[in-house]
Length: 278
Image 1 (cartoon, helix red, strand yellow):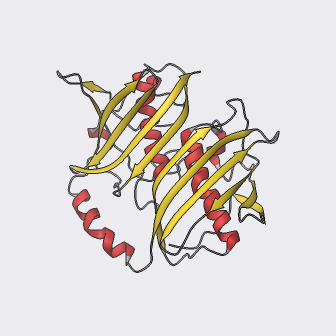
Image 2: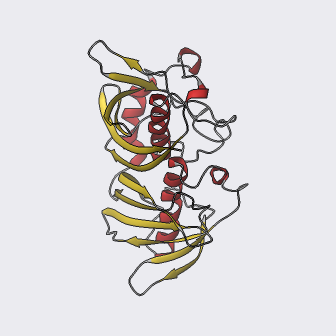
């Protein structure tokens, strides 16, 4: 993985209990996703990455010659009215092969925004690009143009005027089951085509998946204002840009659902979210 030339976190302090304290950048020009609400799943999952990277670098544990992958994460909001993150800390239980961390974020008044947990793996002895090439070739044979995909009405997706939709309308089958689909491309899934997503550009990442699930939640609420209060993502296969993503939706309560994500008939992730009406 190439070395990163910038850092969202600063003023790192190693505590006696092993946690790393840090300050969070307030520069919206450098980090455009800060324009979103602090509780937005896309914001939290992007902070999940950048705060863990910054804290790991401060600990001297980051190896930019190796690829790593987030395989599981969950988050829960603290005070609903908390503002933009100004500081936080990370507890890190990483070893050479596995990632295991917990992040807490706070606003300027020290109100907890959220607690985020994550697990992952490190590819220490694998040529990542060569290993991924087979999947990329298969996915390229099934790519479609965005003009061939019918996206949902953006008014029902809880989007700002500058965010593109990612998912199709939800379909209810005769047996009552719900399904949808997503198409995330490099055009609608990375800056500048999308104002808030970032990433390596190698694959669909955790912020994309959290936004797909959030858009599903918005659709089942017919576009009414909602706030995601809890989320969990279990990710077990890489998802490619430009190839349709199948979404199976399961309601498990008035304010809770899960989505099963697959691509090319292979299970890739399961995401659950809880919410309340804003």
